[in-house]
Image (tube, rainbow, N blue to C red):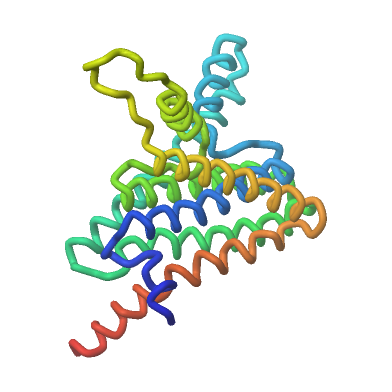
Length: 247
């Protein structure tokens, strides 16, 4: 496996590696979110909307919908907690796969989502709520991974923060510095490129997921899971080899 590929989830991080992994995860998030909507009629990475809908449902007396929203919120939260548990467990044991473990779990869950989806037509009343909760867990898991890796500078499962940060930097870019002696306003062009890339990858991923689910159905999750497996497997193999040598 080439050093270029091995570096995606390596514990030795560089800004370039973080952006590269962030772009891949933004693509996966966009595909899962958009494709998941076609499958279960729910967006599962948008906690702002879910929390707002919970408030509306409580006021309107839609108790069942409010409970469903609370369950979705809880699963997203549990996904983020799971990432923290895995990363900290591996970090204290000095494992190379501390960032790879959550991605391997995400890959397995994406495949599970595909398997669940294949049964939706037969058992839709039972499996539809479970599928929504699974997707929320996956989104929480993934967003926490890149947050931990990039020290909270990159998010991948929603674009509100990305658009806000992009807007701030674009505002600096078009600002005219005309006051002599004042501290100049300078845009961070690297951040502009990064945020534009992440937003673009989320959108392209959304197109891939929507078209995929429309044309081939739940098999669309397979290439997404494979991509995560490819970038996350090497650090795990390093840990397994180290454990075998220690025996």
